[in-house]
Length: 355
Image (cartoon, rainbow, N blue to C red):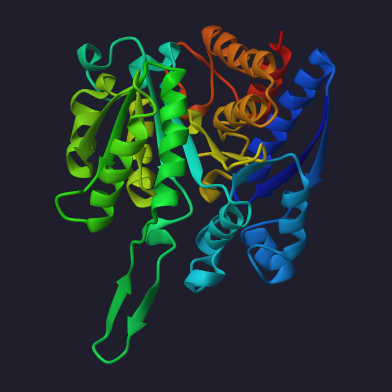
């Protein structure tokens, strides 16, 4: 199989972690007889420095022409003084919208080797945790009308959802549940928000097409509490853009480190964007201490969802497990008695473990 991958290394630790993921993809290609061609697509702060905009047209076209997109992280305090439309993070919103990537899949997976890093009591978390959060990605309050009113020195943001926008992300979540434990929780704030009440109406209709899936609703404040109180009750959570942004970060900390969690942004075609859920961590950039595993697992998701290479995706996931079993840890997941390694060494170990 020959595939072209647009590479957005981004800012901060982005170049380091993406480089390791590329090395592991090369190991997979060599093992399974594929060819992956990488094309750079500058985006974020480094694009602002070089081109004056966070998402250059040339980078957008590169991503459109690719079979998939692998992203490190964008942003940092260097660009905090810029206005909202000029900040590095604006490139992420723009790229998702231009590529029509409307569903974000964020697994919150606690590896058994790291269960002691979970902040919850052992009797709550058990030996493992596997939650999939499906977040609507291109609508809601992040994309609604916003502005400031000079007359009374006020500001406003608008949450908007259409039925098609809700239905398509619900179907992604319900389809995912069919391959898991067939259990969905749709999270909203229907006691307050009219958009949430529309979500409930559409959910009731869509659920009829999935009679095997058990579905429920929770208010977002209750869900945030239940994720700490009893996270194992959840399998697939489907929710709005803003709620998903918040809940997925909360769920990530149940796994012990945000440096372990991958994500996939999908649309109606096989083209997807894959990235770790953590930020650019400029404070540790260039120090060879960043954890590349989230980016590596994002690459595995890319093989699975965009390229249909299930065996290859599992090979990466098994390699990560093997390296963790052997006691290797980056600084963020290190415990006494383990073997502390840097970014490059962790990448080399995982690549060597591909079978």
